[in-house]
Image (tube, rainbow, N blue to C red; front, side, top):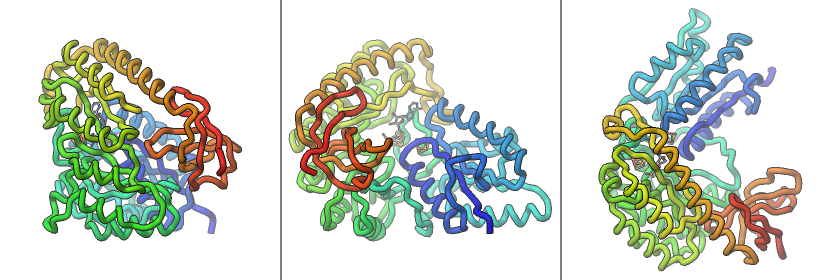
Length: 444
Ligand code: SAH
Ligand code: SF4
Ligand code: F3S
């Protein structure tokens, strides 16, 4: 039989990246092979994101481009899944605007992809018709049936929980991903164990707020006890996790990370804003004092910890003074890196109904924030020059060129053979560039 190909394009966060691996797992099991060319694919899947307006616009543009491909080959199956489809009324908007889309699935029923493709093909024999299946249940059952087709070796993503209960006033995630559902700790443990056994060298635990892991279960398990179990797994590997929430991150978790050799000295602790008034309006449930307390604890237990953040500018009501508080916090914390965003109103969220700030002000503020963070990133990078660091080789972007990260999460580029991908090597850092360090392998 002639080869049949699938093409998946992923928008959004790591959660989506991993869910695309699950979609790929289903398609591979059905006999499809991966292609990087849309035009070669029989099944085209877009795994969407709606965190900001920019993400949504980009996806609309991309779906529009599929029209020609569908016209060229009517047997193509076009599938739209992920967060965007789960917004109120959006599945219908997609179906109307893009009549050539065949299947639309929500965030909690992607495991039904095979069944839906089979159903679509049966329907096509009779008459054309698309399939829309969005589960609006806020607490859909956790599905464990799909085996991901992993594409990020030597890293492996592992969900520990789905959904979010926090309702930060700007955020769409709780609306499109439902409430928190924690996976069974034994299932997580088995998955991590088998990944380490299979040769994965980095495990990244995923959840919107990993610190509240277990709060929806009644077996007494929490993030700390889960980490304690993972800490006992034998073998050399790196453990990372995201995202930690400043309202919930605990001293015992910070201490455990510091004490466990396999746990990376790397914490992503999004602050969002540096002003107490804005943090309150964002419904974040912490203030500057609490945030600095955590940063001090992290630095006490792990002086070399790579601390990173997400920061937003232009939230409704943000004054120049509020924004200066954010700059001040960034100066004081000295993040290794920060993802910076312009606040984007999301329909249905509390903040979207507040009085909005003109775009020109937002855009001017983000410029100042980025300039400050770039300066700090560069200064911290400079401290690495001359040091020898252990790097996990993650990829070979060009012939004889490798890249990987330090334990604290810094990206390093260096020369080497691609067979080293997946191995730990010692790299002497020679140069500091804004986004990455440049080094050379020593004795390894
Ligand atoms: N669960 C994570 C974040 C998930 S979304 C956490 O609590 O930190 C990733 C980042 O996108 C957020 O940290 C936030 O900085 C940004 N973000 C979320 N909603 C946004 C919006 N409406 N406009 C701009 N940025 C937003
Ligand atoms: Fe969104 Fe807040 Fe939940 Fe993160 S914790 S996903 S920012 S609501
Ligand atoms: Fe992630 Fe975007 Fe959904 S950031 S959780 S893919 S809205």
